[in-house]
Image 1 (cartoon, rainbow, N blue to C red):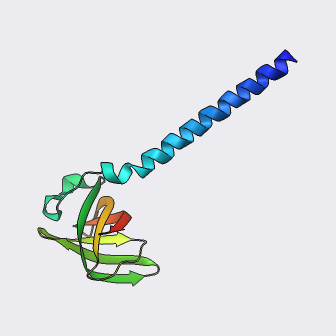
Image 2: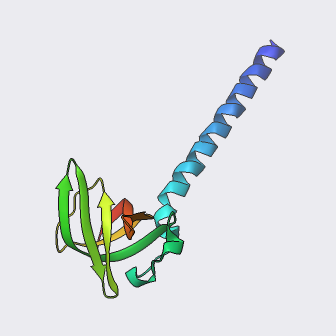
Length: 117
């Protein structure tokens, strides 16, 4: 009987630990957007390739191909190409979080998250 109670307690503690770990992972993902470094477009350089950044701007051009959106976003300092699996509209003001990549010797942002401003 005592062995059964001990085993049940071990399982209970293990489940509680797993729930806490899961909660921490979810919480870190929710706060990830606000922790990403905010940049202006003219501050993005090849040193940023592979890094996550956040920026605000206006969609000035977009093309949809096979459920992907390719476009250009601009702010007061410049413009940069964007790529995402989201729907955007021209003239839409957005805040994006994404990774800086290089495509055909040009920098672009692969968007992970979009918020309309």
